[in-house]
Image (tube, rainbow, N blue to C red):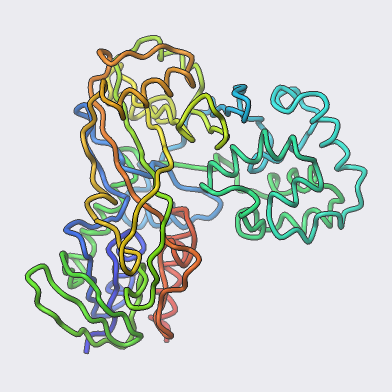
Length: 445
């Protein structure tokens, strides 16, 4: 019997397997595809090595930064360009994101950069927050309800929906405030208004930017984790699919059809048990990356990018990142070219057990700039950036599709330790922190 079987070779699985093996456990890691890292992988577009998905991590905890230091990457942790991002409202207006908010909630409702988005009437309604009794909205079940009751519909729709919704890929009416803004309720009751609560939480936050990256890409975390797993002798089995996951055993089938039962003292999984998960239709994400030779973009017309209201009719994308503005190291590598990343919501059909085709989930495919996907991305980028972009200025283009987990389904047998997005939610910081905590508890037991 092995000590631990880890099911899933995404970042959560790699971090957990590495920590367990480093602590002396005998670990087997099984991954259905032929590659490790999940969506934290690289692809080459226009001759540039780029992150295939996430390009930054939240700094609200030191989970990722601390891991980077352990992996020898501490000297390559970098902060984004301070120019910041813009937003597009439901009716197509664009403006810089206000400087002193939290998930779009303004700390000063009548500040000029807030009024530029919500207007005078919206600012006055938000200012009423200071006159409301502190308990109003404090028991709200969602971030959207909390903001709506304290500051009104305009602040919610024009600021919080594109910003908080863009960050978490979920409408604020479905976001738990205790999860996305820990301490906000308590600060509201203590400070007497939502605006002052935002000020208090920002004052308590660690100095520095809310996100950081790694020179050369977040994918370097995966490179170093895989190297460490080799050092600590983790038994990695690629092209090996789990067909049944139990607390002390995992049934797997290899690419050549060999079925094996792996007995273990403990099982951890970042994917649901196929026998316990109903089919589901999930919303996927398509990321289109464009590398363009367009000197007009040198002026960074929309800073580091844009977050878009999901109901904005002017564009189909929900967000644009001007990556060569956001990351100076990438601008240097790009040699005058510009990297644009556009995110789209797209339905992903799933089969029995909620499974999808792995090739559709995590494969980078080249894009014809004059074809349907490339033309759509160019048109959206042109609208958001205010700069006409033509297909003949595109030197490289690719798209990646993937889907998130079914967060509504437990999907795991009793005693199986859940790791990854399905258990800890989206966001690299949360995933890494939860995975390391799970490994630590097992090593202590």
